[in-house]
Image (tube, rainbow, N blue to C red; front, side, top):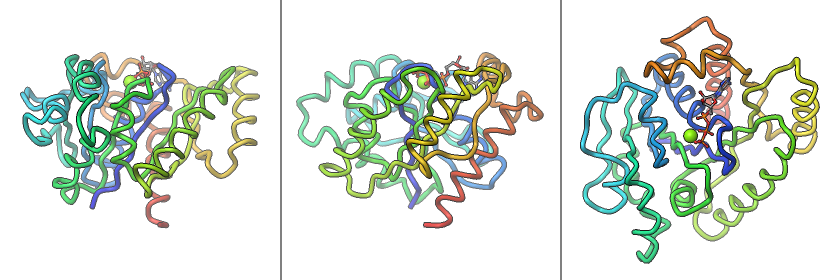
Amino acid sequence: MAKVISFSNHKGGVGKTTSTVSVGVALAKKLGKKVLLLDLDPQANLSQSLRVPPTEYTTYGALIGRYGLVPVNIEGSLFVVPSTLDLSGAEVELSSETGREFILRELIDPISSNYDFILIDTPPSLGLLTINAFAASDSVFIPLQAEYLALQGLAKLTEIIARIQKRLNKKLQLGGVFITQYDHRKLLNREVAETIEAHLGSKVLKTRIRDNVALAEAPSVHRDIFDYNPASNGAKDYFNLAKEILALYSKS
Ligand SMILES: Nc1ncnc2c1ncn2[C@@H]1O[C@H](COP(=O)(O)OP(=O)(O)OP(=O)(O)O)[C@@H](O)[C@H]1O
Ligand SMILES: [Mg+2]
């Protein structure tokens, strides 16, 4: 059975998509794992940031029951089910459905054993799509920018994770939080990173993802960071993050 991981934070622009793609590619291309990326964000940034072969099978069509999850191969052991803007209608369309929180879990079940990891990119909200992701996941990893109020949003998110664990998915865990877009020259970044580590202790991953322009450039040419600039800090940091996440699973 695959380990299912959501990257989530209802705050926008913190690095959810960049992290889902980059950790996924590192696990597949550098660490020999079979990986499925699920784009659960109507913005479809993940789908646009890679060269996805044309496919009519999207996460939207699967969620509304037209078909199952039909992954397409990007390269090697990396697969994706892309999203499209019509996914933005899914929350309303599914809102009166019985068992609406478990639709994604039911879709993942029959294909789970085909992969080592299934990584889910979630939208910047805590609506039904994110709840479906959490109900289907073993762990949630939270990217955080080391800026003012970073911890305030986090309290809300960990509360939701705890509630979903209690009511919908007993196995769900907070896998960890990690700091993104980190610039050690900024005093605020350093101070907030220390506060985050002091508050959350062992839940904070050791790898800090540095602010790195190559990470912002790579998606615009539909390439992953390891292909676009393998020597960049972005590639180094995400390789380390992927190894750290993998090690968490090797222990359990
Ligand atoms: N470490 C980094 N250094 C520099 N730029 C980054 C870094 N991480 C992400 N970015 C850029 O910051 C922007 C936001 O990142 P990303 O799209 O991954 O965030 P997100 O949390 O998925 O956003 P949304 O909430 O809209 O889904 C993107 O333009 C991305 O390329
Ligand atoms: Mg995103």
